[in-house]
View 1 (cartoon, rainbow, N blue to C red):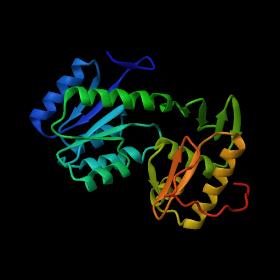
View 2: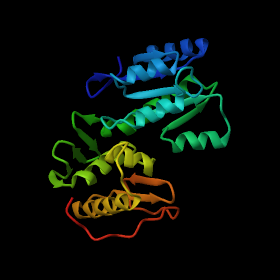
View 3: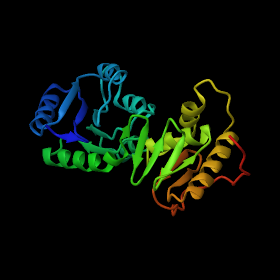
View 4: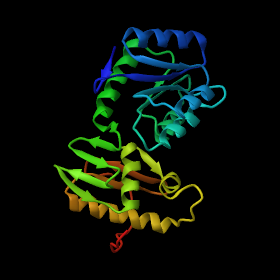
Amino acid sequence: MKSLAGKPVRILFVEDDVAHHALVNSWLKSEGYHIDAFHNGLEAQQFLAEHWADLAILDWDLPGVSGDKLLQKIRSRSQSIMPVIFQTVHSDEADIVRILDAGADDYLVKPYDRQVLLARMRALLRRFAPMQTQGRKMLIDDCALDQQARSLVVEGKAHRLGTKEFDILWHLARHMGAVVLRQDLMSVVWGWNAAVQSRSVDMYVSRLRGSLKAAGVGWTVQSVYATGYRLTLKPDTDTGTEAPPELPDASS
């Protein structure tokens, strides 16, 4: 049985085509993965309400709930990080770009080779293993986010963040390297019905940038023009991003 941090590696696999479902399921079982397999999106959504997985393989065109809606469900949760591979017959470049921008971590056009799928799974599990949450903590490289203490721990030193700063950082860290839509960030941090202005989001992001700099961590919160934000592990060298003006710090 494949293991991660001493526990079986759990794979969520959702595919409505009976033959392809049976084929890929047999591949994964032969590799020793624990499989939670479903034929429609509604069953998978019900599973996600109570359970989690180390990695998900989703088809796009699913009955009940589509694969892109399931992806939204996964990315809306703040308890953990789950890498997602999309598999579909859609080979149009615009479709691939759209689903990757929506939060998918990889994309396979059917039919694909067994060894290609397994290699990409291994790569994602290696990449995300250091970032899996442990209880209410998230580990990223040599840093940690402590949800209970609302702090960023760098080289053993805790840096306390304001409530909104921490919630923004936690949500961005769950999607490290991916663009998080501004409206999604507002909904997660302030709540679906909160009356929050875009300027307030910019203010808290500005404070968060200052806190990351003060903590000496090399993470960068990039502003993606007219879209949202992206957290990266390296200094911002992307000329396609536009940062909002820095605002005076204030207590949270």
